[in-house]
Length: 195
Image (cartoon, rainbow, N blue to C red; front, side, top):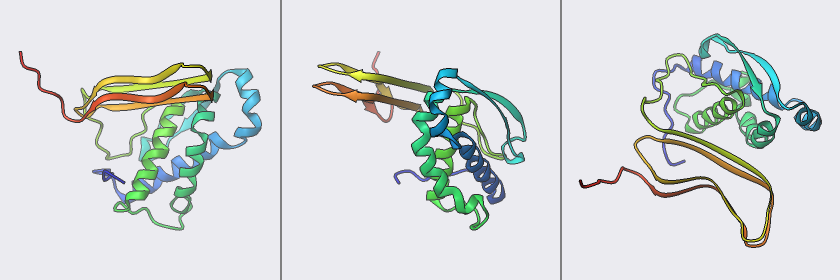
C-alpha cells in the first residue's frame, strides 16, 4: 500500500457501523446478480431505496442503479465484501490503525457511491477539500479491433488534490488495438508557468 488511509475524526464504533452498512449493501447489490443480469439489462435501470445507519447520517435516499455498472463493479465488490466480513459480523473489532481494513472500507464505499450516485460520509469524517477537481470517466466497448485506440480519460496534468476515477472495459480487444482507462502526461505538483 503506498499511502496511509486515514479517517480523521471517525471513531472505531462509527467505522464498524459504516463497515456493516457497506457489507450489507454490497450483499443487496450482489444477491442474485448473476441470475438477474439478463432481466435487469432488458429492464434498463432498477430503482432502490437505501436507509443509511446513524454512522452515515441516518438518512433514506432513492437511487437508480444501472445493471451494467453493477456488472462492472461486481468482482471487486465481492472481493472487498469478503475482506470486511469479520468486522461486519462482529467477529473482529474495527481497528482504526489497520491500514488494510481502512483501505477495504474505502474501496467498498467508493463502489457503492458509484452504484448509488451519492456521497457516503461517516459521522465525524472530514469532507473532501473544496475546489479540488474531480473527474469521472467510464467507457464500455463491445469490440475493439484493428488499430483502434480508446482511452477513458486523457489528461495533461493531475495535481493539487485532484481525484480521477477512470475505467475502460471491453468485450474483446484484438489486432493492434489498445484500450486504456487513464492516460496522463504528468502526475504530481502543478507545473510553474512563467508569464
